[in-house]
Image 1: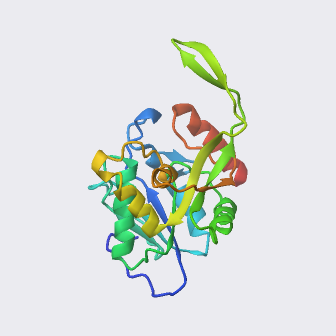
Image 2 (image 1 turned 180 degrees about the vertical axis):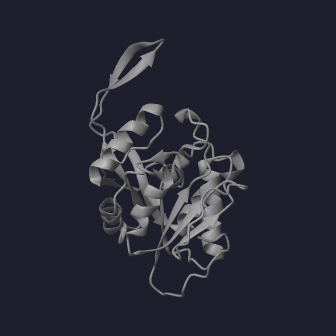
Length: 240
């Protein structure tokens, strides 16, 4: 793994790159260090995530965006690159990472799959499923899960209403869009601090586009709270 942008071979066909924003502090996880570096099944969480993407041959480059001064990761993999340009928000980290890809030879027409480092249970099959679904789509899309539970509106700790869940989805990652289109969508929100940009799909929505919803898996959850670690560890160990 290297910090120096590596040239991407010229190729007239759109290529696929992965981008993992990995600069968060993980404050909700209640850990002493960023949660993406917490050990799960014998490895730091982010390495499980990277392993899934490295197993997908169609992905030519995996860029991991970490915070400046972050020296935790050190791997020797020609398809994986570190970029110490993480920002204060996820959107800023993704925006900076997209520029690194372009500076190293990626094309605006190339695809980028942005994935949460803390979604360490994603599988190569799920990544391939998204790529197949979006390969010929004009916009791109994201893995998502139909809302399985009844959704309530709360007022002062009590139920105020029940929301119709028939058209509700839980957004997951990866989220796959053209580099140029995603960068333009994020750039349009930069002046207001990326307010309202909670993921890449929301940035595309603000640009007037409608990303494709691709069915994902309930196991592809984001490790966020302390109790999530035990569940993720159990799933990882069951796979091996």
